Image (cartoon, rainbow over all chains, first blue to last red; front, side, top):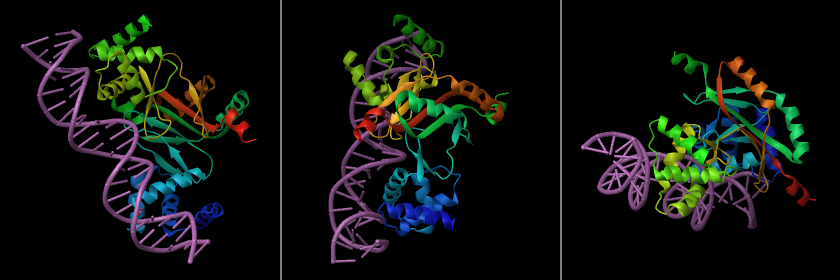
Length: 145
Length: 145
DNA sequence: ATCGATGCAAACCTTTTGCATGCAG
DNA sequence: CTGCATGCAAAAGGTTTGCATCGAT
């Protein structure tokens, strides 16, 4: 945890962003909840528990910066708003249930070869991807029976 | 074109939706522009050329219905708003340039086997997917030189 | 004739922005 | 000290909703 905070604040510093207490608070929440997908509002609620004076605009401004620097990932599940997650190790992808909204995550490397082919074919440098499968999850399938 | 309109209005009818002139106008525009990704607003502008009295709310309400029935696909490129496209034949996927915003489409079947594995592993019935690769396109790479 | 569909305007929700103040470097 | 970062409130942008009217069945 400490290591990670340090790593990330280094990224901020070396890009000439100041290490403010708000930024550290936001990062603490993100790191403590690696697995979670936060909307800006949800993250705001969590950060307020540490620092009640933080403003929602600060959350938005920093999520923007963090995503540019590759610290967070922006996820577009819904179209009406964004979600964010810490992007640490490998990317993972999502199975989204159209019925209950549950999100199952998975990792896979099958896509790597595929990506390389695409890059060659279109002369396109891929730096990120978002893979989403929509369907009906186990629980909802069982309910229908 | 006529065939397609007929096919789609049949889908509407058999789901107890009325075949209104507005719905037909929206479908005409979508079918005439199969390759295009429309925001609700953009589609609204096009439909107004055929029927100047149409309302934006009608566009939204019907895009919702069309997507539920599988007539259109919802695309979340941006997170702040949705785009829509007619979903006819095979799905296609997108390469999105982070610099200029250009969208390149491609088809591929590599993913089909992968999907089958996922379905088994998670007991999850996949009905749709959205695959997006973000990066830098050929033109923008050349500009940097 | 009925009830779903429409147009309009207002409401809503998420995100962005302007401005005065605060604080990291 | 300087200029970036912040908090607040207002504005903006996209989408949804309430209501009276219209029109497909």
